[in-house]
Length: 208
Image 1: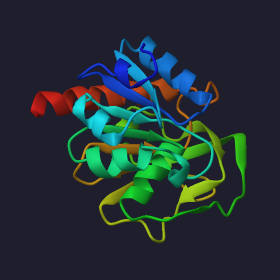
Image 2: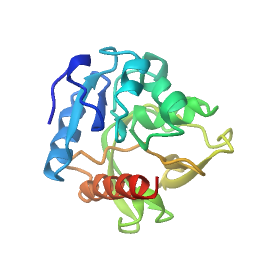
Image 3: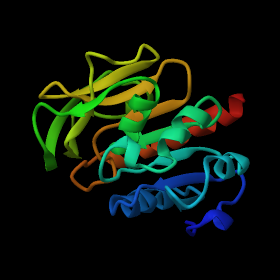
Image 4: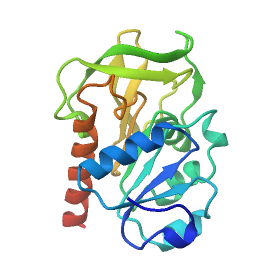
């Protein structure tokens, strides 16, 4: 686990971008449990240029309050690093990926989800490849990536019972997003998602 602040981003480690959200601590806890070496930076601690210069092994964009445009460097991570660094976005991080590639982030027609669980149906792709079908996931959000205007470069890979997109991946780049919270205790198999993502990150670097 790492510290906060530009001076603390060590070259070549996984970086967790904290969008000022208490869930970031849970994400960090899971990364540590999985043996991952990482540093945490707040979304306004450093510029996208400083982050890029550290050549991070991967970047995880945390949940956060508000909308993608309120997320400091998080949107720029998707647009400027996504073609060369594996990314995972959780909740608002997932919405950042959708918006960065031209999608629309809209109010969820089902209203605010706060600590509710949903069954998630999925295609067994990407970070969801080791998840049961369906699985239970924790939802804390009022916005979603709109499926009607989904960017062609992105592929929805999971849906809630109420028909909202719950996960996505980029068709050609190592970019994944989940709308729900894998790091919540009310997503029982959530740690599998982070474990699978770390495996995909390893695969990316082996192939690179």
